[in-house]
Image (cartoon, rainbow, N blue to C red):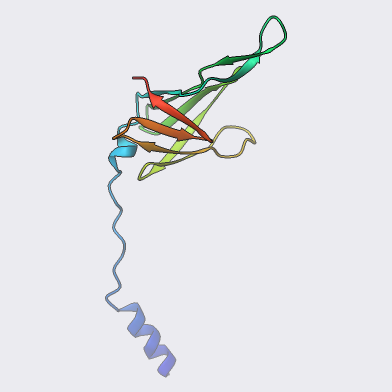
Length: 123
């Protein structure tokens, strides 16, 4: 019987339910932004058979439902999908069997660190 009373007391306690935090500026300002890699990366083979270098880009937008999405133009292909953002920490859910990509956004500096490379805000 004492156990039942303890459970009742815990159920009626004054434990606080965490409030959902409003999205940070690092997340809400990403839609419509394009970032370009600071250093050129490989983007396939040139006509002479050597590895060509080009600037990779990451673009963010909001779809019709308001979900933040990404398009990553890297190498000679593009990946896209939804992005979750929490205080500037980004995690993607690409389509298919690809693993999630991760990054961080600093709106004050206009930078993005994405999968091991630094990107600067272009627009």
